[in-house]
Length: 279
Image 1 (spheres, rainbow, N blue to C red):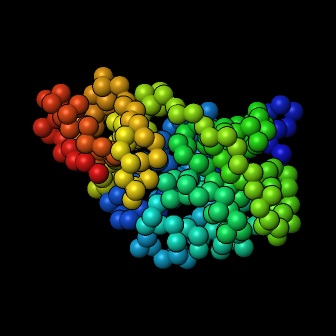
Image 2: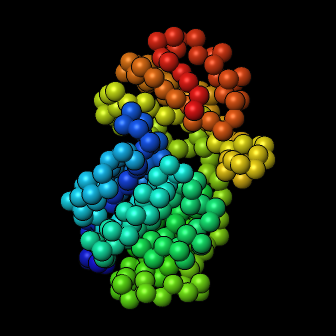
């Protein structure tokens, strides 16, 4: 990646956030939330959504046509194998691209993931909105060193102005840097993630009113947080009204607990035209 500052002006860096969903009707709230939070760089960020049923070559071709400088993948249990394959092929096609992973499927073993997959430059650990914005502060605006971005694991090839192929050949443990974990963000400070609801025609929209879980179920990654953070009730009602005003037929709540039933459903008296479901 070239230096991004010229006489104090930011240069254009192509950012592509990519989601691979389980079905066509699904959408990925994570990539929309990352883009909304990094609003200063919104014009340089594109989103791409595919499904696990797409041919690998078709996904590769679509990403290659965008020729991003920074490529982010949202990783879950249903797509992690496919994403690993894509990263290996994209490294051959676009050798200088910076490839970052995020999501629950890579947050808990970021160092191991980097050591095992030479095509990956870095992993965003845990909550991604502020981490992603600071990564763009580094890559685009040169506002802070990469080592000062909290909540990431990366190898030297993730840095700007490095010979990615040279450093990628050395996968020794000492070349993986892990920064301190990022403090939890104020959940109500996150912006509404959806710009144009017309883009979701014939698709399910996902929406969060809480993050985290107080329980310790051994099979669930949500148990890592050990606590719950709620979005402000008034803000939730305002945002659900947006769905209602746009006649969105179905919204799925992405919740780790069932507290939402007690806290919100009773207050949604105007929601009879909106099908609410838990995910």
